[in-house]
Image (cartoon, rainbow, N blue to C red; front, top):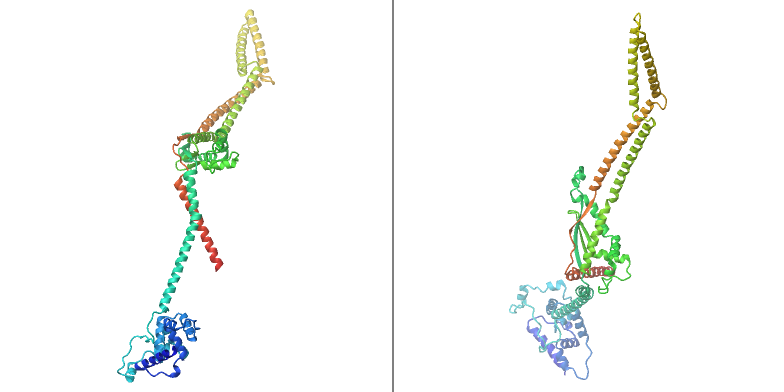
Length: 541
């Protein structure tokens, strides 16, 4: 019962083909009955399924397998329409577009060959010669089916392509959502969670820290007598730049921390139980750990343009921070006073030693002069010698006068004997006195103990004493100049801003620190992600 209607359908299609005015079909080109039956079954699966017995299903025929293989090729709609037109040109009856491809391939015709496609363009003269009354089909027409049109479960290639594209898009969306979820999970675990923990610590758990700010400068004594470049820079901040840097380095050193710990108990202040564990020092903390905490909470900066040293001292207690700041300022003042003390002390010691040496030498020269004067029992040997010379001159004059007087008396014929004897006696006495004075003069001018030698020694001692006096005066002037120079080198520390206890905590800054933590964690995650992606790309390539 099933084969006879199919044969009638095949004959009807032949008749319809003849009615259209097409060329007669060669019986050798027609498909065998079993292939036609398979094509009919493929065209109307619902009808064939209805005609099948319920006992069991028939195995698929070769035509069905070939059609399924052609469908799997994914031919486009344009290619299928082209194959149907080529099949109509070769008078091949096909039940569907895929069946037309199958029949053309069985007859050795490539439906997609360029020459076959060009042969589809037929001139109007050919139609006029064959049949002038037959209308020309301008558009591709579907082959009328040999069975009623029923809804088919098969999809066209365009619909199948759209369906596959939709599946690919849905798969891509699923993968994108999955990757996005993985990305959000990683960001939440590596960035958001640490940021939340950091914010919780800064806002809730961290111990408030109070800061006290202070400012001070280092000044130099006025130097009105300075000259040159030093005099030009004496009144500016550049004159004390080295001293300011030295004080800054000292306040940031471990020595200052140890001194502050001895005086104020720095370690004990930061090892109390009510301080949070991150900022708290252990009771047995080493000096290095305490020094790291000291550098964290004591910040000192120097502004070279203004010459001001700014210091910020932080502590868990505002009063303690103020005390720390005041004590550090006193340390800085002591350091400033000691910066030039050694130099000034050395200069003053050298000047004082020179002055004392000059005093000692002058004392010795004066003692030598006194000893020389005491040796001759005379304070002025030169005066004694001049006096002797004056006496000798006076005696010689008197002796000459007496001799002239005696000569005048002796010129008389009868001189007065009394006058002659008196004048002769005066002459004799003057000569004895002159001899005595000459003897004294000879004793004073000859020998080691003569007055002349004593006078020379006294003159040399006086000259030495005068030189020592000049040296003593020069040493005294040097002492005064050194003292003035030492006073010019003195440095003074002036506090411009005194530390004041703070009423509100300065640290921690919750929002800024949390934002900084977020940026740090994000940067670390970004670097790790880029490194991992680069390594994965290198490995896969």
